[in-house]
Length: 255
Image: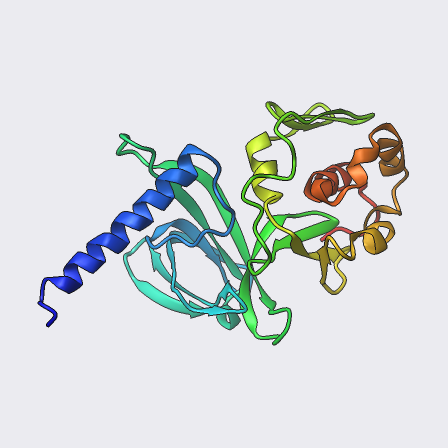
């Protein structure tokens, strides 16, 4: 016979497991799109383009593994529940706790935009990993590579960029991305991609070679980088090459 204490004990166990998971992410590498069970600082973008800042919490409701409902508390303390169809998107500042440190560590703001889900075409919040001429969204249902496909000993010296596993990506004199961020984005075996504002499509290991020209074939600067570093053609460097493309290949259309 179950006692009244059994339920609280189960809740305590669940909380301990959640905290342990968060600690492990902070100590090693975080996983993009990790839904926080707590409200965090963030923002909401309304249909008219207005942006309001406050506290954001994702509810555990999903379509095709994408969140569809958030609770937003504004600066006046008023909480409102929004479905993906109600707003243009939201962002939240993901925080984790390191072992023996009561102060949370910020992992930066994650941006979510309202898009039709890939199969059912139902409005969902889709996590944007990278923005530019090529915009990349996370496929939360794709297989997760537990240790990054980008080897931690990687080093590339390009014509207009440089990348090392310690220092990250540098393009030109000003653009920088930390190596940790690049590794986090490269944890997945497939992605959803927009090119120059067109319809989005899925990119994975199986169709990458077929789509490579569509993605990167309109920029001579990328041809030079590929000649200098042939390994950039491999799928494991998709997110790295896309970021380089977005910085070097402006074109006439921007998202």
